Length: 173
Ligand code: GNR
Ligand code: NI
Image (cartoon, rainbow, N blue to C red; front, side):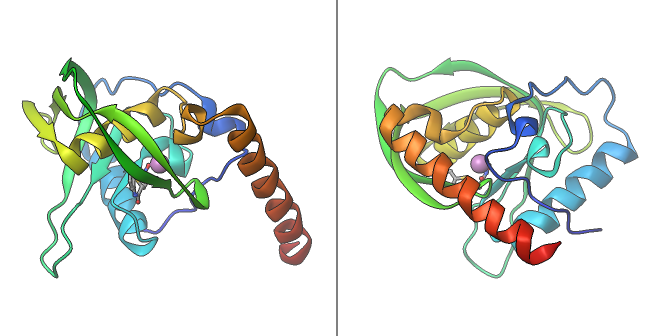
């Protein structure tokens, strides 16, 4: 397993639409293992492959707070049904470091996907899991949570992050 670098906004890579996985093989499982390790180290509760620069429809999530890890793997996730009623969560994103904002999303979603072994599965999620799944599926479409904020708030965040990046580049290079 390996910890990979997480891309941060602004980065055109994050705006790519990720491609369907044709075959769940050891390469995909290695990718998911690396994603999980990268996510735990960050730390975060979810990660989409594009966040480490791999444009494939692969997501990992772990909402467990205890010592015992409960990783969830989703390949080619598709939303079947979303609830009418929304809920609001304060969201953050490992690709938008240090920034948090309230986002409204359907409170429940029913999805289909392939699991770690390539088996077709379905899941009805609600609450934080539903929010996290929708946040990650957005990444597969090149969407970030800041896209739901007002232009003013979004521009402010993007400008702040680009400045931070410029400062970091000068230090690192
Ligand atoms: O770590 C994360 N926390 C989080 C909190 C509220 C809603 C969504 C998330 S996902 C985020 C990790 C991440 O950036 N996943 O793409
Ligand atoms: Ni994110």
